[in-house]
Image (cartoon, rainbow, N blue to C red; front, side):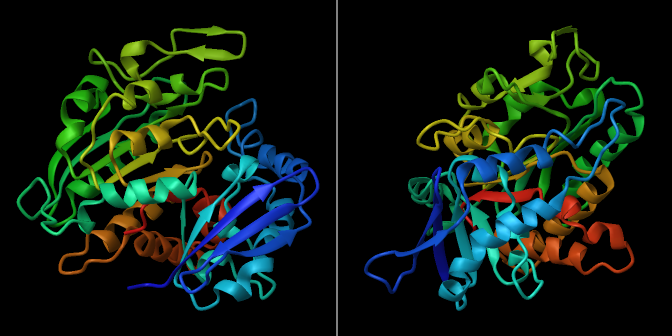
Length: 368
């Protein structure tokens, strides 16, 4: 079994406290970083708000400030966890938006190059996710008699200049379909409907949704995934101020996800903004990630910001190749690390080595 350490953060207006929990210690180790809550908050727009310009082009976030900040937040505990394989990171406040696994250490390596990294909204959620994981149960039989069953949907949107994006969403949905072993339902385009999701999501081992996401800053429970309906791709009906309104039959909201009961070992939400949650006091995260965990899945794979769909496709394909490899049984967190390291080390596509392309992908919940 891999050695696992938990690292939990608490941010304040003066500094950040870091609590390291290791199995051999009676009490946590406490470290400090001279990073304030305001400094962390100032970095968040560099990840989200600058990604899309007025014309819709994608702009790489400025990672220089993030490098400095995240580096200060991981260096204090690196020696404490040197012997550990997996790090459970429990962020606090605005740190939920920062990809700490992409922090550079003093030796120039990213944290993900030293450790496998999995996130959790809180320490208490970890136990809940472990209890939900079918891999941890003695019978360990999935719903398809050995081969994992899946529901995979890929759908774009009826937006100007979106044709190429739509094709890539559909290609991504077919990734599981082409893997040896898994069996299930794969629908793309106009057939990838909200109605189909609601009918089929509760008896599958893997749920994968590749689509556009929608984040409602005013009411996070109304955030959701844009799916097809009535033979049509998702399209906005109107705009109220800066808020775009989508038809309810095309928007699968976090509120609706709370009402489902998943048996899936993994839910992958491969869309823009799916990893963003509205942070509330006490780390009460309201959003799609928490909704999926509440619905019963032990692990959710999400992305924190809008990423180029070509690199999105590359990473997701690599993740499933490792995780679903016939005859092998590796953990989700190891499969994600392998996929990210492949992009970091890919000299044939040097631009993919930039954290913009691989850093937004995070595994939340159980690592196994």
